[in-house]
Length: 140
Image 1 (spheres, rainbow, N blue to C red):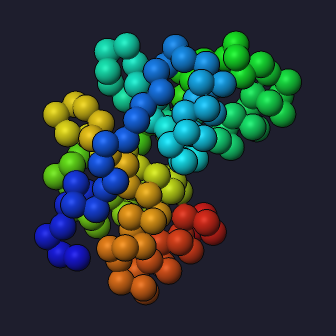
Image 2: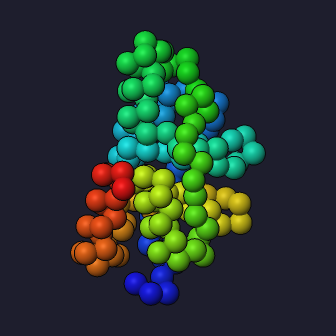
Image 3: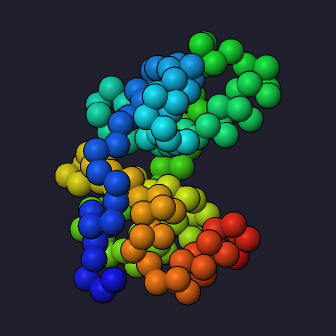
């Protein structure tokens, strides 16, 4: 793994939901592309945060909100990212420190991909992957 960068292990070409688009749009996009989280991009094409399927359920539906009326930007959370040229170890450390399972990868100010648990599983030795999973899920 030494020498590998975030760009080497990321899933490239991720789609963004616009900050002014509804949570209903976000849910449909998640369904259509088969993901559980989307980066939220502003009108300036910059990353504003991430929204997960769980955010939509817990922060909107369970709270009695209307997903057609609430925008993705209103629920934007997790403005944690890594540079495309950062080491895999740096990406892993950011994910562990923030207890997140998905990390946007930024190159020249634009999102170019996402690193997920699945991407790490393909690229980390078993013991390092087990350690990561324990830290993220156990909150160490």
